[in-house]
Amino acid sequence: MCGLMSRFYSFKRTNTILQHLRLSSHMDAAEVLLERKGCAGVITLNRPKVLNALSFDMIRRIYLQLKKWEQDPETLLIIIKGAGEKAFCAGGDIKALLEALKTDQNAVRDFFREEYILNNAIDSCRKPYVALIHGITMGGGVGVSVYGQFRVATEKSVLAMPETAIGLVPDVGGGYFLPRLQGKLGYFLGLTGFRLKGRDVYTAGIATHFVDSEKLVMLEEDLLALKSPSKENIADVLESYHTKSRIDQDKSYILEHMDKINRCFSADTVEQIIEYLQQDGSPFALEQLKVINKMSPTSLKITLRQLMEGSSKTLQEVLLMEYRLVQACLVLSN
Image (cartoon, rainbow, N blue to C red):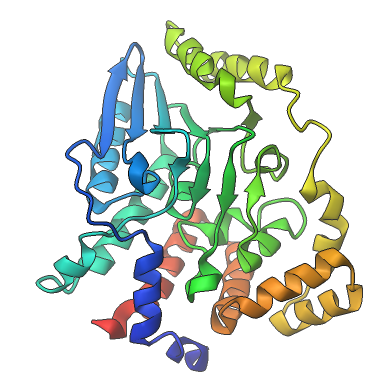
């Protein structure tokens, strides 16, 4: 393991990771809108020009407001959504981190620590939490949605954990929720960074409901119109929209290839997974081979171990494990 970790310690890889986390020069005083509407607290990730990427300030503000709403007896429902049509949230944005690093060597650690604290807070939130994951949802965007009690996908949803392509691991609790998906689907998603699209986000078990995108505004209005929303009331509203949707109802890339995914990604080593894909020889298997060959070999090995270890750990234990892994990726760049 020490040999594997040492390969992470490179300035070039760290820069690649930082770039992946949506570095940006855009500043917006209203990066996130935190509003009370009726009985609901509504979080709007309000940076559509950068695909609603999460900044350090957004993470802190969401966490603090989430805790206030959780204690407020008049707030009975929490909704999180992204501004614009392109994305719910494309991941983390540490646009100010490089500058902060010049004077604060703990900036990277602070960012990931606070992000993971928010992930855990969403998981333990006592109020119903509805994530409208319409559009691109990756990395940190998955982290602020997947732990909510209700997750609503649309035909425009695109969800992925692409970290193995940039020398990192699928964090924000990826080691917890990925191995808990059906069969070996989570291992496939975590290792290849495959993009789930549309109804497959629901079929995979990441979304709890699927709604036509043109009905999303109406759905939100119906949720906000609930006078004293209970989990059952919220579930009924979501189910009513879900059952009416017919888009891509009989189309699923995941179901079509589930047998191959289970067979090829059941191995305990990356080398064995590659061998299984080669033996399978189907167009699907050969495509995954091409993808895996483009990924960081070190990330693949550590991610597989991460998912195997995480399958029997609590979310808090997984977040702690991932925090240490991420810091090991970045520490020598300082």
